[in-house]
Length: 357
Picture 1 (cartoon, helix red, strand yellow):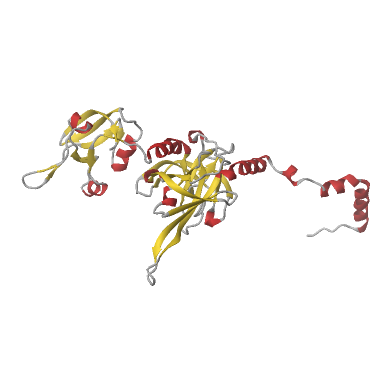
Picture 2 (tube, rainbow, N blue to C red; picture 1 turned 180 degrees about the vertical axis):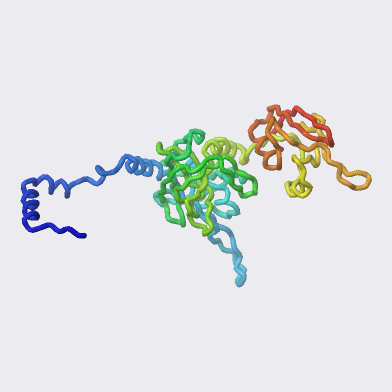
């Protein structure tokens, strides 16, 4: 039922309004910002501080016309990135720049710069670029600590979804410790899951906490349609802090190694082997010096397994990714204990890691 004001009541309220002139003028003169909630004010402040650090990365490739045979430059893809430091270093996803002939970085004020690849880590889906002749007014993002995140904490994503530059979305940390596939089919572990809207073009952009600190690099979504479905993934900043300095200094991740070649995961699965067999041990390298042996062919041309790696420092090894992830926890020069199975015999080796060749 709709209740309407009667004539006398309406006249009384009108008179009351006239006797309170400040009430009418105050309603018209209110500063909208004064009505911002604490959360809104926080979001606005973070965006204002962080958005100048977010960039748009365009990837172009060369294509030959089938009619004229002329070679021309065509857009291949695009994504986001952010300023790592004031020297002109930019961090983005590897899949954003993969296969590029030319890379163009557009700053928040639409200035454009050519960029060169400094280093790549496909297994972490990270890449570092360097602007050619960078300006002197670049602003980097403060780095947070992804180990301090918890489910339910507020996060903000800034990027260029569908080419719409400097777009802000907000959400929460939905889960921690997820795994996603890297461009080279390895597994990226410890990934952050968020419901902040992440769409194509957001890849490589920053995920920020409520202090405006970088806590992740937006990298993937789970979506049947290809658009945001409330399930996005970001590489944790602690991984970024470990990988990026290596890419800057060496152009790649420095992986410790023991000097073996392992059987493929497909082969392991096919023959239902528990652990990962060593196919070949390289002479003179740590595994060889420790006494580990690889597979060999018998006089009947049958494959006879040597050592099958089952554990590294207590961590179970089920496939090649487990093996590589276990080694990534260490530095060249560290000693690790590798447990293997050789026939019916369980063996243990102490091996000193060396830098990958």
